[in-house]
Image 1 (tube, rainbow, N blue to C red):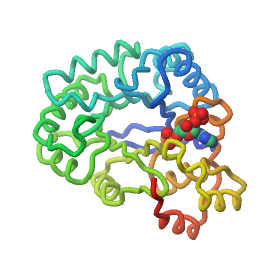
Image 2: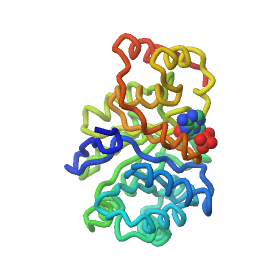
Image 3: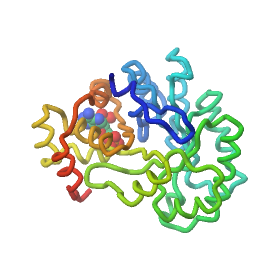
Length: 272
Ligand code: A2P
């Protein structure tokens, strides 16, 4: 079976395609539209966007124009990290829904535990309040699952203290040499699926000679090894590309990295 047809199961019981198409840094307009069309045409059924990517309009249009039944697609968007005032959550969600032109999303995430201008700041109390609003959206049925992004152990533990609904997903920056073991372990223990954004380190892995040597051994590209590595560690990769050949290549992952090579890749420490 093609990897694009395989699914993980969320703690809501819903299936989620094992590889998603990431759209971070793809500008709204033709580029986001054409890339999303190319992804859908080549079998991707899971699309990841966010309000702050600014491209929900084009991504949504590509989804709607595809003619693919809505229930065969999995669409994620995100609440901006800057929104820590619970009274502003619903409004941001409505903006995303309007831009996407969809009736519901499959997953709605808190984009980060802190505003990007204050990385690491303590917003635990606010995140609890924001989460209650996310739960209300979930209970309304307009987000079929809710989750978080960029949450580390302390953020997750704080959230668990007041959450009624356990997040379905934690989407984190994850690639060979940057594997956030403690966050992954706690998420997995709590039944939270971990998604890997920037699985190619936004391209920085592509020139790595150690990964290139492994790639050569398997007759695969560095990108394919990097994505297969994520999957074999039990995470869901969200590769991004604007090029159709690479979009296809990133879903051609039906091979197996040996246990020894996984150990080696898991031991790599890269300065990225
Ligand atoms: P492009 O969009 O021109 O294909 P990440 O998924 O970690 O964010 O990495 C995305 C970066 O990697 C983009 O610059 C993208 O460029 C590039 N990229 C994506 N897939 C491949 C691939 N299969 N081979 C080479 N570069 C790739």
